[in-house]
Image (cartoon, rainbow, N blue to C red; front, side, top):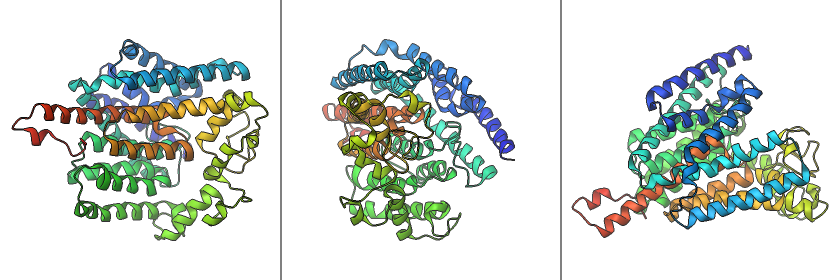
Length: 455
């Protein structure tokens, strides 16, 4: 029965591809966008097809953007280039030392990390290119709305019990359902300059459905909190009254999310009761293996889960590092990427003294060593640091850090989310540039041009 339902679902995913082209047009950029966001469809067809698809995406992106890589607009472009070069040296040194299938390694290097580098250079000119910027904004919002529609369809045929398959973006897993709603929130917020109508709030709320359709817990808590920060902290002219006005909306999102997500209510069922204590205790138990915060801080406490895995950063011997070479360059990415020992957890067949899930920071440390961990983190950090609006930058950095250490580092480095995040960073700078121009060239329309996000 499930296989038949899944066939129906991906038939609709296939049709949605043509609908999206109808809505956003057929051109070089739209082809790239659809290729990236319909990755799940190619994965559903088969592993071999999906591997060829990854190669095609990278080659196509390179063909579109390679001429822009040497063009330097500011110091951030230089930083991104330098860090990517250092990462590349570290990555290939690790491969030389540890070996593995070259096709798999190339796939990881080009599709997962190189693609973000290409996006950065491909989108950096939107600050000056009005038509490209506005087209991409409308196209990406349209794609997000298609993902919402597919998520609603998924709920209709599967209910709330199936985590895997996130819209057209991901097949066989549900990890993207955590980061895409957040990336969509940032994009839409910035795209509207922080000025949201009632319709805009409905659209933003609809992004939440992507997470709910896959039963994801983290967005239930994080999505409302980030929304509150955007309303009460980022907007330069926020008043206490404006902040208080949105608190009921934030509480409503948290309330509905907890009731719909079985693991976040005591009854463990859809539309269970709302219990804040249960939410807090479940989060602590899931991430650290205990509900007692004081216990986590004890020297003799053995933590589990993604939160507990962070302790391994200061205990490299528990990662099976025997010498400086292992510490700096890791055990190699290949056997982790192909899951030779099963899923990368403490219970798998890896040199890992830990119980339960681990965060992406630990997986990177284990496979690529300290250099790989450091340079990948810096790539994400420098990308977000390009945002001139300090308050917005801080909020996005907070989420990036959480995703990097406590989840799978998908926010910046999963292709579909990367497209949204990279575009958002440069679009935000367009607002700052507009304010700067207004200051130097005041006009009767000056107040209309200024955005509440421009500080």
